[in-house]
Amino acid sequence: MAEKKLMKGNEAFAQAAINAGCRFYFGYPITPQNEVPEYMSRELKKVGGSFIQAESELASINMAYGAAAAGGRVMISSSSPGIALMQEGFSAAAVTQAPMVAINVMRSGPGIGGIQPAQADYFQVTRGGGNGDYHIIVYAPKSIQEACEMIYKAFEVADEYRNPVMICADGMLGQMMEPVAIPDPIPAMTEEEIFEAKPWALTGHKNKRERNAIKSVFLQQEVLEDFNLNVLAPKYEKAMRELPEAELIDVEGAEVVFVAYGTTSRVVAEAMDLLADEGIKCGLIRLKTLWPFPEYAFDAIGESTKNVIAVELSMGQMIQDVKLAINGKLPVDLINKVGGVLLDPEEIAERTKKIMEVR
Amino acid sequence: MKRITAIAGHYGSGKTEFSVNLALDLKKEKNKVAILDMDIANPYFRSRERQKMMEAEGINVIFNTYGFDITEDLPAITAALRGPLENEEFTAVVDVGGNDSGARVLKQFEKYFRRDDCELLCVLNANRPETDTVEGMLEHLHSIEIETGLKFQGLINNTHLLRETTADDIVKGYKLCRQVSDKLGIPIVWNTCREDLLDDLKQLIADENIEDLENIYPIKLYMRPSWLDR
Image 1: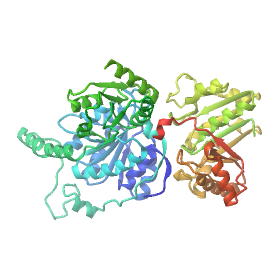
Image 2 (image 1 turned 135 degrees about the vertical axis):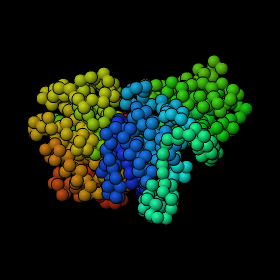
Image 3 (image 1 turned 90 degrees about the vertical axis):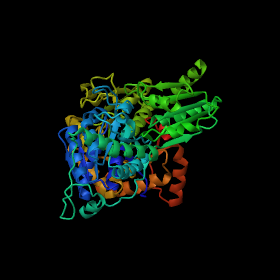
Image 4 (image 1 turned 135 degrees about the horizontal axis):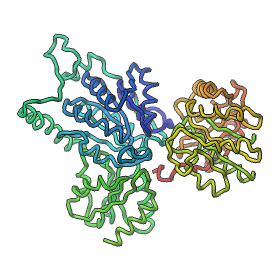
């Protein structure tokens, strides 16, 4: 791994993608992710890749769909309202099993909303967003370093599962600076290697196999039923078995267990220290995947725990999955901020104490 | 020091953190101090985010017309910025947006920045990938000079890795800045150093016998919330 450099999140995301073998990127500007297309426009050509500034978010995801269908390692990025515009494309990429990586640098909503950090896309990214029975695999990094490592993993998982994979970052993560060591570059696949490694890809049959076709239209209902039940469903079941990830911090013996993801989990970590100073034992379940949701992590909650508190920058979205995982065994409360306003550690500590009094 | 100090450089190099430190320190000596936040390139981590804190110290904080909204994403600044540039009673720190594109805004105020009571300084952080070599630094300075039509009159070595900074980083940055300084014939005006690293740096200077590393500027981190270091 290279020595540490001071990088802005968005720059590091782009460089990590290039190092992970990404050679196709289709960008469209939106704050707070603009440094990703800016960086790609400058750097991708240096490694023989292709950068295109698309005319819209919809165009950009459909260009990605095309490059992915041809077997390329492809990435797109946007921020919340832009991701909303791409949803038709995610649905199409899921049903055609086109692997791609998308970065969502979340900002506040609904609508055009604001440009400050938020986590109000939890529903959008975990509940489809587009039409039909599909899922996007979603990683939620808490630091720039972790984001870079997750981007590597995302490309591998996208290829293995032949499914779009999203890195769900928030505006803070995209815009802040951190020391980061980007993992070493891996070479992009040659056309011959793609032909071997991705036998489904539209590489041209070269008189060696049958023609490939990629399509998202199934006019015979039985054919689509068969596809959904026997291709998509087993794939998503495998993802639910193999991909969920969470970090557990001091959950055992905790009186209060927080659940959080992304930069919010770092604010929670500082709040936990403040509460510990007052003798309150706290634990944290930090989600590293949003879908599949790491339900297994909740098995670690023991008899000592009286409160589970979801902490998120939304009106209460992740909390629904937390409640499903807790399954009525404990009260689940919400500590949140919305509209691009951030939580601070003192406020989390105060609100936690209030919740404990009420309960 | 000149009456007006304009701070430009690579985005993420620490221009804003330095500008805020400089404005607060100047206020200890000067009566009228203003910080002119000319960053219209990026809506995050701008000096206006510390408006309340600086105003409490008596510093004029000037940015866009819609002054109440620190997160305004408009490439617009207020004509009030001209006040401290023209009023000679003021000492002013100009916090410029990152890179050549962020510095473009200086062009419309060119006449002020060409005067003798103003100097344009470039912040350099040798831990930023694009300015981690002498060539990279020179190219960066050149790109901003081309864009603004102005010449840099000095350098600020602001080499750091946030909380992971060591004295070695500062010395590494100094050595690169020294070469840039020699090539361009402009001084290293300051070498910044986080306050808690001052003793380490002085020790390293003595150990490595680099007494020409002088003009050390102690820095506090005002822009970064503590939880970001979790």
